[in-house]
Length: 141
Image 1 (cartoon, rainbow, N blue to C red):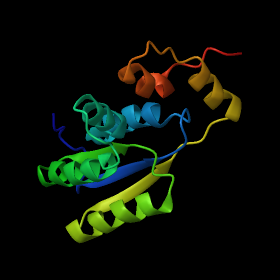
Image 2 (image 1 turned 90 degrees about the vertical axis):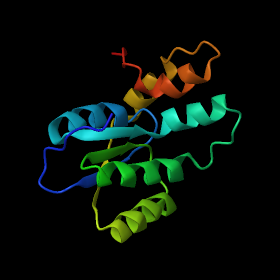
Image 3 (image 1 turned 180 degrees about the vertical axis):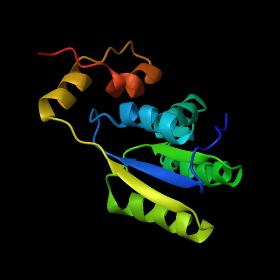
Image 4 (image 1 turned 120 degrees about the horizontal axis):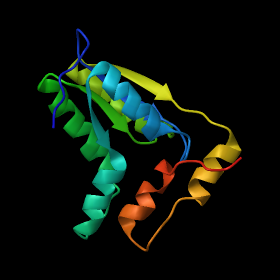
């Protein structure tokens, strides 16, 4: 579903952060505020894996879908890690060529919180559970 943007011009927001740092939580709230369609790298990897495909190209697929969504008038948030400089450079170049504003948002949290989120994630030998683990709620003290 493409969401109606709440900004004058379209923007792509790429989330930068480690596993368990709160990327998905920030993405959800930001999407509500700016009227954005969220593209989750994990969801793309899961679908590719279910189809027996290698998922190294998930980021490229996400970037290309983001550009198509922006053409339809929505803002986009890429909920992935974008930790490596080459990942940021790739999306930066595509946005530049398309004439779309790109913003990077970096998430941070205390190490014990991130580790707690990962350790308390519940997996049931399903790839969906594994990739969803980082969004687990921190229940530590």
